[in-house]
Length: 95
Image (tube, rainbow, N blue to C red):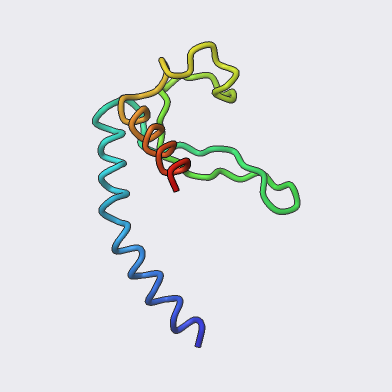
C-alpha cells in the first residue's frame, strides 16, 4: 500500500520540481562559465564518501576549501550564486 502511494507522489513531485530545477540550471549556465552542477564530497553511512550534486554558486577554479577560510569569498560567487545565497539566508532566518 505504501509503495502504491509513494510512486505516484514521487512522480508528481518530479514533474512539479522539473521546471524550477531547469530554470536554476539555465541561470547558472548563462551567468558563468562551467557546468551548472558539481559534486560536493560528503560522508555517508559507515564513513563512505559520496558525491552530492549541487548547483554551482562559486566561479570555476575556486579553491576547494571551506568558504569561511577564503580571504574574500563573496568576490568568487557567480551572479546567480549571490542571488541563491541571499535567498537561502532570507528563507533560513525568516521562517
